[in-house]
Amino acid sequence: MSFFNEQREQSLVKSTIVAKYFSVWANVIINTQKKHPQYAQKIAYIDLFAGPGRYRDGAQSTPLKILNYALSNPDLKERLVTIFNDKDTENSKSLSGAISEIPNINELVYYPDVWNEEVGENIVTQFEQMNLIPTLFFVDPWGYKGLSLRLVNSVLKDWRCDAIFFFNYNRINMGLNNKMVTSHMNSLFGKERCYRLRLKLSNANPMQREMLIIEELCQALKELGANFVLPFRFKNDSGERTSHHLIFVSKNFLGYEIMKDIMAKESSSNEQGVPSFEYNPADSLPKQTLLFQLSRPLDDLKENLIHRYRGETVRMKDIYRLHNVDTPYIKKNYKDVLKELYEENSIDAISPKGKPPKKGTLGDDIIITFK
Image (tube, rainbow, N blue to C red; front, side, top):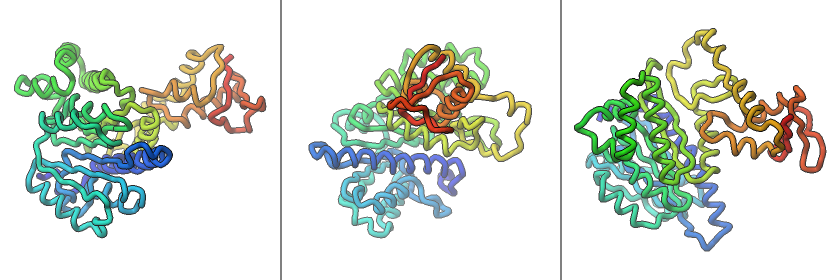
């Protein structure tokens, strides 16, 4: 498949986000397991559309990055269970060969398992009937076949299991109005939601379509009990159109916080320090100055906090935790805004011991009173 001829920048960013999250997530889970020996002392990484392991230019794809990281970590070598699947026989054979060539791969207690199956009812049912160990689940289909709410939920149902999937926006956008693939769209959004979405899209412009489609997908996932859903957008080479979204799904705020910080750092641009949660190859091109200046999201956050918390007293970390979900803002944005409000005398700030904060700093436990 031509997709694997060479690693494009977008693929590198995607792979970097997944690998970074895996390393932090794995350390959090392992530290918890060490404190609670009664828990299963294993973790898993599952990739159902794993590809051949390497691009033809020699670059490693995500499975090899995960395995190489595991070999560098003594705890992971003892605990990591991996399942890599690709329905293409040549891809699965190539991946098996690439794995066998990794130096010291036999140091892993659990040798990687490579499957050659089509992602569908059988795999979903299999996962639904299993009580999974803590698992990071990655789904990166070529289009949309095999991707469904049931598939994601079959893993998310269990403790400390998170999912990341690549959402092919171009193909799904076209597929929503294609009667030939109605069953696939229903599997992805739910039948009733898919019907309502088509009605909403009938008079929507391209920007509105994208917002509606992603919003409905996020709401469908939340209805399954995944309280935290975080999309990251990829633009095409010209930067004019959206090609994909990388969607992170978790039931745990800590996972959401970790991934939000990673995606923020991988964003190709920011406004006033607020990350775009987007990779746009065209961001290196000169910006239109007037349009750039009109976007001031940190000012919006400032006004929002003043309105939301007027007359209330609350800790800095609680303001951040309660307000940031489903927004583009990261913890630093909240601290910057609150420091500005403090300097303007629009809020009072005091430590739990009754002392004023040190100049230029607002720690997580600082108590804020909005005037």
